[in-house]
Length: 310
Image (cartoon, rainbow, N blue to C red; front, side):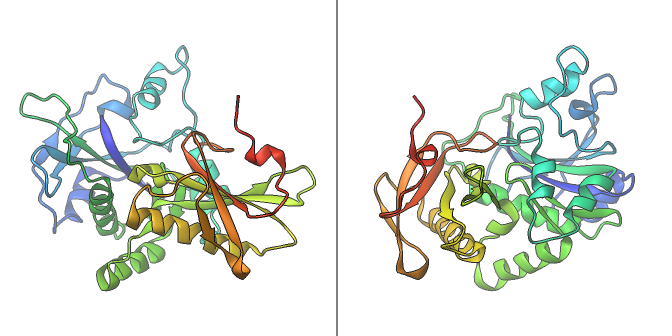
């Protein structure tokens, strides 16, 4: 069982030697041989790196010279790919279609759709826990944030490998170019600022057919064991920038304070507005995950946004 996952999309065929050469600051315990008879999603040879602060934690790094499989596969036509998706082979929280959605909703990098179309392979980094008897057991004191931070540092080191196009977080449906990754890691080093923008994406879509109401939501907080955020707002009342700031402020608050927002809590928003939190087990859009919906206090929000499923 894998507990975190990050991906680097690549523009050319790479080898484990290419990857290992860029990991000079990380301890490499060895290599797994892979299984030549297994589907590539399971059988690729990999580097194994110890996960700091743990006894049995490991990072498994493999090179896949195949395009990212954004479809779940078919149990009859492609049972290997179907099994890989079903068993979490691409990381927890990753859901089919995540790359396409990430490319479509990447406001920070206009070339994201080019990387989606033109990539030829990917480097896969995943964390797992394996005891001496080779059974998988996640410790009680597991730190999801530290796991993801360590993966991000490794991915940053691999960003300089010739052929690496960008960072892709499948669970956060976020694509980021090397320069944005560099900047985020500088902020982490200088101010200990969590690189949430590398792990999450903020998206926007229509709530009604006319587009008078919009929904802005986040995806990716499940990697930290936290809910995502959805905000419905009238198009004419607020700018995208105002609601984006509201969403990101709530994400930062959750990441630093924990899952402390409950039904009925009020949060400050743009122009001195107050927004009421309502928790839902599932969001309006893929991927499946728990969310906190924010409704402006006193606003007549469409029933479709606030009604709980029966």
